Image 1 (cartoon, rainbow, N blue to C red):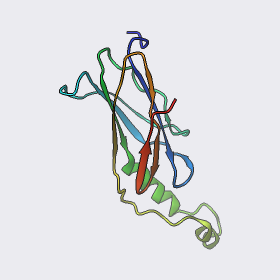
Image 2: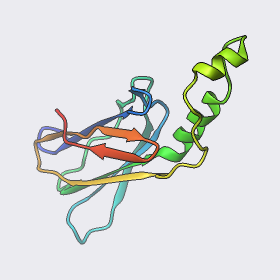
Image 3: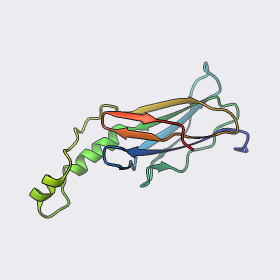
Length: 140
């Protein structure tokens, strides 16, 4: 199947609370061929160290809607755990300089982004994420 006749999707995540890419976030890609059709999960991936999913599958012909599901709860839990374990030998100094630890529970345990697609177009959909909010846009 040629991806030139179908739409394609890519994504990445930036954790705006720390100003870095969000690594190891599970992402699933689903598609459907109309508003009344059922969602079909096409594949699952996880963000790399640069916050990017580089291996999302191609969309099948006839796809009109796409859904990206980001599992953010595990990411925020891991961030909370790493912030609570100082790397420095001087723990008091490290704790004084470290940002306030996050609650291990995520306000948004998952983020689902649904958008319409047109054959032949590429859709890059970045997720800007922080513990209490998120934003998405169509990138390039």
